[in-house]
Length: 402
Image 1 (cartoon, one colour):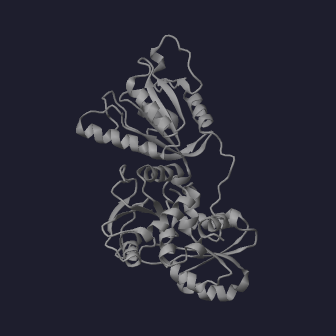
Image 2: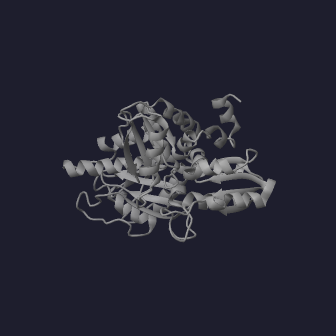
Image 3: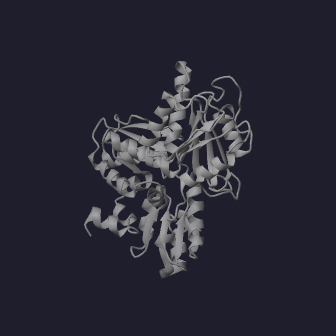
């Protein structure tokens, strides 16, 4: 990702699905104007999902996903099909590529059912229309195209844009919680896990949203927080901290200053804040032998003091006093079956788009497993959950009765 590029998680994800040899990869190449995917006459040329970030008018910044054919065979083919279907979890709009000479097959209908079950808007692109004598009547979400001839490729992009829709409500990370000229202090530890020479994505996005709000950023490490607050006095409206130093920051931040964390802001931005609050309360109910899944949306290199695999498990063990077992996932890996877990603790999901995070929340809901995030968990452990939710008085009233 370049310095001026939109983060992948903020882009519309367009997934191309279909059976082998329907021409998915050829159509992806035609739509993107690039040789993004390998193409051949051999069935199953695309063996793994291929993702490409780009600008696609009229939508804007997008991620285009080319998937393996969902009719692949054999044990290896089944794994490819599973990967293709997993891409649906992050897909904002699906393009079903069907062979125009065959029409809608049973396999295509299964995909349509999957789109509907996941509430993913979709269009049907009948590829290879150059093999037909006449173009049949078709529905509004259907179009006949030829990747080989370039027929109706522009019109397909227009249809994708129309189906994706235009979001009229702009979501804010922090901007709706502050006013112009407000001073917001961001606490960002620089430890062994911090990337060299740059801020991590949640910090970058929060800084930008504060600037877009005509407010004032002050960024400090946790070791300089007390000095910064002393210099700024009563001008500070809010302190936003990295969750792993929640305890120290809470002790040093006066009660009259609103306090929350990057992780809690992202819980609202990417998923369901209310569900995360409810999930945090489960910590008190954990018993010996319960299993907790700790899941991260990225795949950063693990350090000896890693928050997900070291600090959080130790904090949870210390808080509950129980013999808890832990499971760990990272990146795009997330179990379809969560029934073995008593609780899921997820990161802030800055690297996942909203649909993928909501998909994970829904999987937990179907399994009857509470889900929360790092910030909520750490705030609960330190006894400051109520205070950390102070930017959201309706939740404070709902869960704490005041």
